Length: 134
Length: 137
Image (cartoon, rainbow over all chains, first blue to last red; front, top):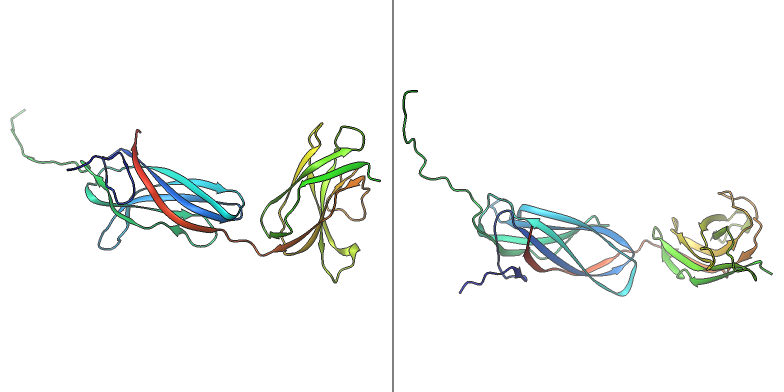
C-alpha cells in the first residue's frame, strides 16, 4: 500500500510536484569559537558523469556564538522549490555547510528520497488537421 | 584611592584565541555618586619579556558605561599571539589613540592576565538531514 507523505525522515520517499516547496531540516553538533557559514541543500539525481547532478538548491546563512564543550545541537532549514522538467523517483537530497574555515562539510547523500510526479510536459498526437485557401 | 570604582563581572578567560572577539563586562561608578564615568577603556598591554615597560605595545579599547547603572561592555579581538595584561581604566578625558605616555587614571580594575594562542577551530559533528516536508508556497 502506498502512503502519501507530507513529512518524511531520511530514507522515506516524499512525493512532490513541480513548483511545490520542500523544507529540508539539517542538524549538527558544534563546539568551538563563534562562527558564521551557510547551509546549502540540494536535490540531485545520478547521471553517468555526475552521481549528484543538482537540479535545485537553496542556501541560508547561520551564525553560531562561542560554544565551549560539551557544545550545542544546532538545527537549520532551507526551502527548495521543485523545478519543472523533471520526473521520477531517483532524486536525492544532501546538505553541506559552506563558508567555514577549511573544507565544506557534507551530510550523507540520501539517494532516492524524493519522487517528482507530473514534472514533464507531454506533447502527443501532433498533426496538421486541415489546410484551406485564405 | 580610586575616584572611579570599577568591578569586572565578566572577565576575560585566561586562555583565548587570536582573531576571536571577547567581551569584558562590569560596572564603573564615580565613588559615592551614582553616575558612571564618561570615559572608560580596556588598557591592553602586550608583555614581551625582552621589552622594558616603556616600549611595550599598549592599545585602548573604549567602553561606554550605561547611565545610572554604570554597566559597561568592551569587545577585544586580539590580533597577535602573546601574553597580555588587560586592565579597565577610567580617565577624566578621552584618550587620543594611539596613546604615548601615561594617561591620568581616575580608577582601574583588577588586572587580567591573558595568554593569546592559536586561532581555535570549531568542530562540527553528526551533520545529517533529519526531515524534509512539503510546505505551502
